[in-house]
Structure formats: C-alpha cells, structure tokens
Image (cartoon, rainbow, N blue to C red; front, side, top):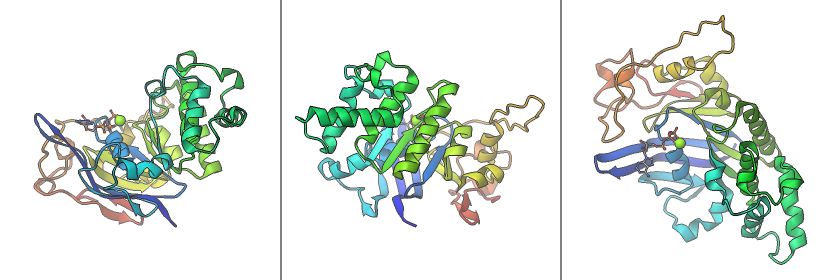
Length: 316
Ligand SMILES: Nc1ncnc2c1ncn2[C@@H]1O[C@H](COP(=O)(O)OP(=O)(O)OP(=O)(O)O)[C@@H](O)[C@H]1O
Ligand SMILES: [Mg+2]
C-alpha cells in the first residue's frame, strides 16, 4: 500500500476583522494511490479550503503536506511547478474556471503545451491529441470549435475534466464537480470520472455535500464539522454504522425515494458555533442532544472505534 497524498495536522486559518477564522483545523489523513477520499459536511465547514490548501493554492497556516512522500508544505511557487501538473482541481462551475474566449480545442491545447508532450508547431499532432481527449471525456468532435457558453453544463464539465486530464495528473481535487448539474447528467459525469480513474489510476479527493453521490464514488469518507474531522471510515461502514451524532444527523437527512418509508430524520437544533476564535471543546456540542460537560473545555480527539473507523466523540 502506498499513499499518494498525506496531510498531517494541517491548519488553515484566515485573519478576519472579527478574529481568526479556523477554516481547517488540525486535519490528518492520507489517500492511497488510485483511491477516492470523499469529504462531506455542511456549507462553510472547510471542504474547499482543505482541497485548495493541499494543492497549495492557499498557504497552510501549519502542519505538513506530502505528495508521493515528498514534503511540499514549504515549497515556493517555482519549486511547486513540477507538482502543479500532477495535482489538479476540477471545480463545481466550469463556467467560472474555463476561459470564455477559448474554444474546446484551445482549452485542451493549452494543457497539452504546458505538458510539453507536443510541439507548438506540430498542429497535426495537437489536433490528434485534442480529439483523443475529447473522445475520452465524451465530447462530440463537431464541438471542437465551440466556446463554453455554447455548451450545456454537462459538456462544460467534460471540457474541464479534459483540460485537467491533458496535464497528465496523478491527483485530482474534485470540488463539488457535479453539484451544479441536472440530476440526469450528474450520473453520467460521475460514471465518466470513475471510468477515468479505473483507466488511469487517478487518486481523488472528492468534495461534496451530497451524501448519495459520495457513497458510490468513495473508498473512504471524512466528515467535517467547522474545520475538524469528526468521523472517518470506509464508505460502506460509515453509512452502515455512523458513530458521531453529527454524521448520524447528516445521514438521516438523505432523501429516500420510497414515500412509504418514514426516515427517522434528525433535525439539528441549537446555535452554530462560530469558526472565528472557537472555544476549545467539541464544536458540535451546542447542537448535540448528547452533549455534556466533558464535551467542553478541551478538544475531543479522533479515536478508533473499529479497525479503520475513527470518530471524535466522547460517546464513541
Ligand atoms: N479567502 C478567505 N478568507 C476568509 N475566510 C475564508 C476564505 N475562504 C474561505 N473562508 C471561510 O472559511 C470557512 C470554510 O470555507 P469553505 O469555502 O472551505 O467551506 P466549504 O465547506 O467548501 O463550503 P461550501 O459547501 O459552501 O462550498 C468559511 O467560514 C469561509 O467563510
Ligand atoms: Mg466549497
């Protein structure tokens, strides 16, 4: 077993006019080569910040980041260059990340030239490669000269994926890649991402607030709450046996297609803890029906509840 990506005690804090915002707070995990780590949690819990910090699009506040066992935490922009290609990101809204003035051809060509696999002058080789990548992600050849606004959401996301692929990455942070798509297209794009992973052995950090999506694509899942990991487990086990009260509440909120099935939905009450200068202790305590004095005063570390399954709860 070899880990492609590892983070140790990673923190990303932002200075705000109101105090220090703890967006990612002491997070440790690793992702095995070729596997998918799902990241779930409510809006604002730090999922995107985590993904961006691992790629060093944000400078980490403290902690360590390793890629193929090489520490990249302190590398500057120039030193990061060889890693930039190998670590890619796919965003929720490819409209925002694709250049509106570049056609499908030009977008993929740009990646190919960065990768230096084809000569800028060899138009024939570039054309062939561009078409190969379009085929790989399922974009019809007739769309080669289309601009992003001429494509529907699913095709735009496919272009975003092709652009990342043409850089020949090993690790891809997928930040809500299907959340903006119609439900009917969502499954197609997810299947594509899984097929590509099987074909090329990509390692994914798959961020989403949609639990039904993450269940199928992930090998392991971490559940985040206000910057902290509150539970981590193999995907199936997390769904079968959630331990942390927050995970239980999240899972209970997944819509069930059967109208006769009465889900025991847990409605979270109580005020949200602020991520700005949070007090020590469990950050979920104010909303937790089981909270007691032991939950306050000191942070609750993750502890092993069964092999490979950890939860940060005194009840665990
Ligand atoms: N550049 C920044 N400066 C200050 N605060 C930031 C910055 N980026 C993110 N934050 C804050 O960090 C916290 C985590 O934000 P983040 O975007 O990582 O959450 P998220 O889990 O991705 O949410 P969503 O599901 O809405 O995408 C939030 O409180 C957010 O306001
Ligand atoms: Mg986000």
